[in-house]
Image (cartoon, rainbow, N blue to C red; front, side):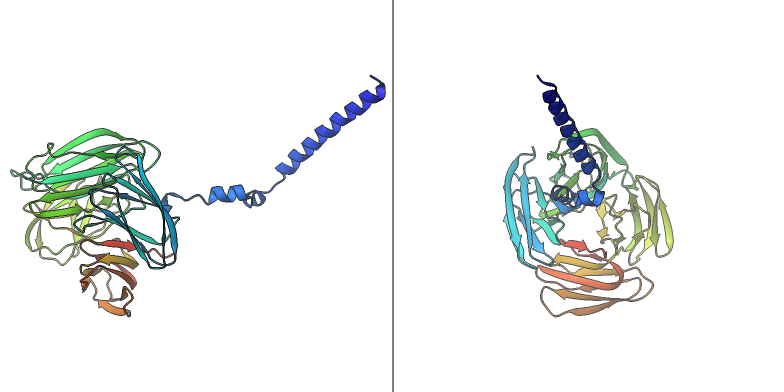
Length: 401
C-alpha cells in the first residue's frame, strides 16, 4: 500500500474519532431544561403517582362500583382483581361533567384499582344491601377497625388487600371485651408476620381468637409495604360495613353520650389526650380508661395520631366525623351533621344536587343538621373549618391549594 493511501486512511480515522467526540460533547452540553423538554422525559414525569389511583376492597359478592364526577368530563380505567391477584376485568370508562356511572363487579372481585389520573372523582362500592364503602387514595402503616362482635351467630369478614407491586408484611392485634372486667378491653390476641404478596387479598379469620365478645377491635400494624382493609359484621338482622381509621387520618370524633360511666379506648401507640369540654382524659397506649361523663355534646381527640373509641356495656357509641375542612362533597341519603368546634359561629353554604344554594349557621361548639331523604350529592362550603358526619355516606374533604 502506498504512503498516500496510509495517510488518507489515518486521516479518515482521525476525522471519525473527532466527530464522535464532538457529538458526545454536544450531548453533555444539554442543560437540564433541554432534557426535560424531550418527549420521552415528559412521558416519564407524567406517569400517575400513587395519589392518582383509587383502591377499593370489595367484601360482598353482589356489589357495584359507583363513580361520580365532581367537576369536568373524566376518562379513567378500572381493573378488577381476585384474592390471588389475577386480573378479572379491565374497563375504560368516561363520565360527563357531574355525571354518574355504575359498574357491576365480578362476583369474586376483591380488589379494584381505578386509574383516575388525579381526577376530581368520587368512587365507592355499594353492596347488594345498599351499604357504601368509599374507595381510598391512600394506604397506611396502621389501620384500626372497630365494631366487630364474636357473640353467638355473629358473622365477621375482614379482608386486607395489598394493591402495590411489593410484598407487605404486617401484624394484626385483636382486642375484645371481657365479661369479667369493667374496663371491657381485657382480652388481646395477636398474629404476627402475616405476608401478603403484590395485588393479593388476605382473608383474616379472628372469630376463634376471642370468643363471645360483645365488642371487638382489630388493629393492623404494617411493618413493610402498605395495605388497605375492609370489614363487615352481621348479627341477626343487622348487617353493616365497618369504618376504617388510619394513622394518617387524624380524624376528630363527636359523640352524644348519656350520663354514666364509659370506657375510652386508645388503640394508638402514644398517650392520647381526650378533651371533654375542657377536662382532659389521659389514656395510655393500647388501653382503656373508665370515665364518668355527664352527657356532654361532643368529645374531641387532640393528639397528633388521635383516634379513640367510646363504649358502654359492650356497645360502641362513637360516631366518626371527618377531618376538619372548609369544603366537602357528601354523597348520602341520611342527615348530615356539621360539627363546629370553633369559638365563633360558622356559616356554611350548601347545594343538594342541582337545587338552588342554601345556607346554615352553626353556633360555636355545637352541631347543625341537614336533612336528606334520597341519595344526593351535597357540596358544602363553610367560612371556617368544620367536621361532618352522615350514616352510610361517602365524604370527601377538599383541601385548598
